[in-house]
Amino acid sequence: MRIHTGEQPLKCEVCEKMFSFNSTLKLHMRIHTGEKPFKCEICEKMFTHISNIKRHMRIHTGERPFQCEVCEKMFTQKSVLKMHMRLHTGEKPFKCELCEKMFIDNGHLRRHMSIHTDEKPFKCEVCEKMFTNISDLKRHMRIHTGERPFQCEICEKMFTQKSVLKMHMRLHTGEKPFKCELCEKMFIDKGHLRRHMRIHTDEKPLKC
Image 1 (spheres, rainbow, N blue to C red):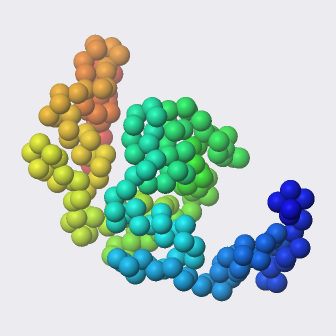
Image 2: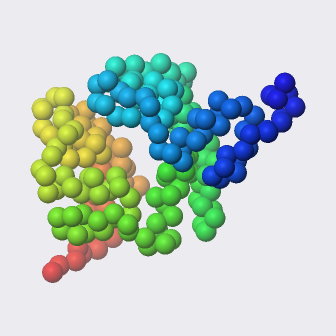
């Protein structure tokens, strides 16, 4: 009946959060105790809840049970599918309170906020360069390690970044999505277009 009445007679002694059922309180207590009773038999990573280990196992099995109805792309988690759907709907529910720019998820908003705060909490241990987010640091580390995880399926050339591979693929496909508005010449990336624009503006590139 507590589901219908909203009664919450059980209190967490640590944070004073209220619960309706002892089982829910017991699960909650693992946040404070750090208890992780569920272990992945493949990589031995530990989890607090059985639902978390079930989601984790999809990394190993490759199972993607959630499908986008628009583009049919498959996902391991319902929450990731929900976020992906915003690419189709254009929904951006997270707003920057400083410049009012909108974002599809909280992660993108947090990374954006570093522009305003100038915070760079992630440091490269090799060259000590600072970064605003962990993903930028990981990409940077490939300069030092020489890792090139993205491979062209046509010529097998390897790349450090997915975006660079995407641009490289245009050499094979012939795609040129960037157009000069003055002469309508097409280019594979913005850099080539900008350099081309100097012909029209008579702008000279800076020299050392």
